[in-house]
Image 1 (cartoon, rainbow, N blue to C red):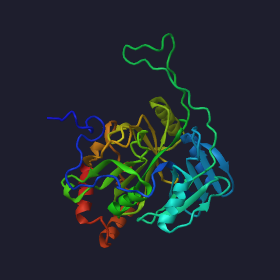
Image 2: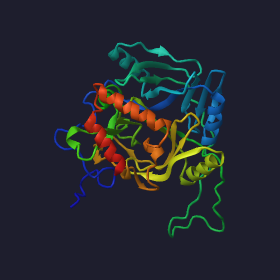
Image 3: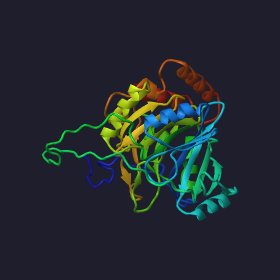
Image 4: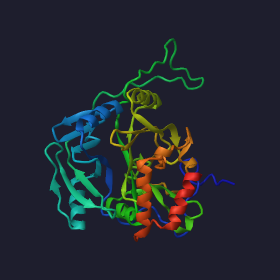
Length: 377
C-alpha cells in the first residue's frame, strides 16, 4: 500500500532513505552555488565543432583561432567553451557562485587563490580539483551575454481544450534553438568521496540516489544532484555522478523549448549525417523528454525539455539502477548510450575495467557484477 503522504510519491522515487543511509546534503557546506555556468573542452578542429554546434542549436558568441564559445538564447554566459588542443578532451565544469564573496570564501577555505578570468568572460574564478582529479571552477561576476530571440512557441490543443482552430501545426525542420546548459554527468572511480566533496564545498543537494540491484546495503552508485536555492525551485539535477571504472565525462544536456523543437531539431541533425545515440523518450529521474546525439569528436550531448524542478525541502529518493528504468517511455537504451557498442570504444572500456579492478578504488569485482546486471535489466 502506497503512503500518499510520502513526498516522493509521484515526484521521483516513491522510496526515501533507510536508517543510516546518506542524507544527500552536507550539514554545513562552505558555499551554495547558484547554477552550472559552462563546460570546457579541448578539440583539434574548431571549425568542425562550430558546424556541429550550429546544427545542434547553439549560436557562436566568440570565435578566434584558438577558442570557440557556444551559447544558448538565454541571457548569461556561454554554455560551452572549446579551446584548440591536440586531442579531444573534457577539461571541466564551471559553477556560478551566488555572490562574489562566495568565490573568496571558497578560495580561503581550500587554500587556493581567486584569480581573474579572461576579458572574454569577465569576473573571477577559484579553480579546484575534485577527488577524481577533474578541474572544477567556481566563478562570479562574469559578463552576461544579452538574451537572443527564443524559438517560437507553438499553440497546442490539449484534449478538448481547443486553443488552435483553422490553423495547421507545421513546425519547421530546423536546428532546435538551445536555451541554456542544463546539466553534466560524470563518472568516477571515487564516487562517495567525490559526491561528498561537491556537497560539502559547493552546497549541492541530492535529488535521487540509484543503487545496483541487490547491493543497496553497499550504498548508492549514482546520484542526481541539484543546486540548493532555498524556496526557489532548481533543476532536478545540475550534476550527476556515477561510479565506474574510469574518471570521465559521460554527457551534458541542453534545454530546448518543447517536444516539437527537440524532435524537428533531431530530424535536422539526422538529415545532416549526425548520429543519434538514444531517443526520443522521457526519463524517470528528472522526467525530462530527451534525445541524445554524438558530436563529431564522440562526446555525448542531449537535447531536453520539460524537466522536474525541486526546491530545498524535498529529500532524496532511492531506487535500483536498471537499463529499463532509465526511461518511462521511448526505445530501449542503446548499446551506444550504455557504452557497450562493439568497436574500439568497447575494447577501450574492457581495458579500463581490468585496470580499475587492479587499483584501490570503489569499483571492485562485486560492483562490476552489479554494473553488468544493470545492462541486462
